[in-house]
Length: 480
Image (cartoon, rainbow, N blue to C red; front, side):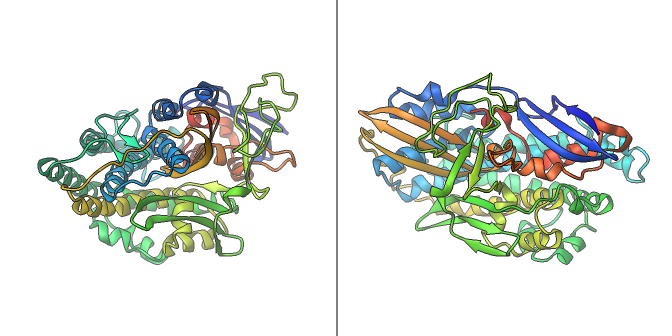
């Protein structure tokens, strides 16, 4: 047996390291380590409850608004404020813009450049893919990055700035839009639609959103556009057979408006093909292999304290578990829970999630979110309130659950005499990149890496990169 250390990874937010045991050219066992501790939960303790709206978004510069949404949601749960319809719609638009931008970054900057590695130079498709997707010099990024930047102008209109905006509040958004700004908002979304329909999909968004079967997706791969290029590469390299894992898929629900949500909360178990309500109270965090002090495993009662000398520790991340099991989260989980027939069919074909299904779900979600954002913008009623105000919470506890681009994000808060007694954050990458638990059960990525072929390339094997990046690590969130 050979042991490989893989890391640090480039094009990753934060620090990630893998320890891989290799037998006969394949990964026999994997350990995923978050190598940084940041201590945001200790920074929040003792502060006025509303400070969470200032501090929590600074956990991450990529999913900053998602952290804002979770902080606002948990303060709303404690204080009992309900945003007006405009507040929900405007927050949805801003949140969708951030998540779409994250999906674009993942596809164009983090995932696709790995196909332009020299290890693929012998493939017939390599020259075209290298010219299109190579990091820094590829033509695709030169088109995608300006489109992403224009989309994020939505943040200027609704949130004032990005990242680390203070516009998202428990009662809605702080800034009301006028008619001219609504028209600018619609123009930005229209301009972004044009980019998607010309460059990413080379097809109307509604056509992409209507894909329902693997056969339809295969037919779509014969068209133009960067997504079709990915689908062809995935078929050629067998990405549907890479990085497979069959675990419960969870979504905390996203984009609430009125009495419903665009993507509902829930649990989908690919092993049984069954959809269930999400048992939030069954969420626990295990620290058996973490550099953290042992205390309550219930996020509502836990205190995160470092213990760098922990005997079995190999990661600064906790190990979230749902009813005692690891669970996967992300766009593939979000769409499976929402009942999307295409994503469920891809999962069924693969016997669980895999690299192909994870990336396809993220890209297709771009189309669905862009369509939804246009509808939310048109639904804004400019003569009505965008925010309700109420007293800050004095005593109580609550949970704020949202969906970041990478998946389920939860904030647990306890307030005593107006100050934060406890604050606990369970981020999407914490779920997916968790270490082993007390029963020795590996986390989702640790399981997905088992069986991956490394061959003579060893630590530089592109398959390792594909599996890791299909989960899209954001290690600064994982380290709180």
